[in-house]
Image 1 (cartoon, rainbow, N blue to C red):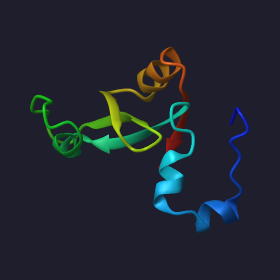
Image 2 (cartoon, rainbow, N blue to C red):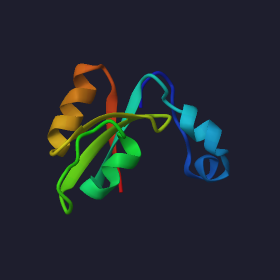
Image 3 (cartoon, rainbow, N blue to C red):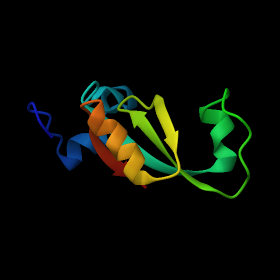
Length: 90
């Protein structure tokens, strides 16, 4: 992590959800794998997508969904093009 953003494991466990959401805001994004059935909850305006597909969402550090794609690589590339450090969550 750049610009002095370092969180130790015990601090992360004891931090409030609000503190964790603001960590890296504007600098960090995360990529999360979802199923196509989860798309309407994140992107209500998205067209209907066939069920059973594996998709990837790029989220801002605060959890706001930024983009939806069918490849992790495309999500990471979008983060880099917007000068965001991408991390993966499981």
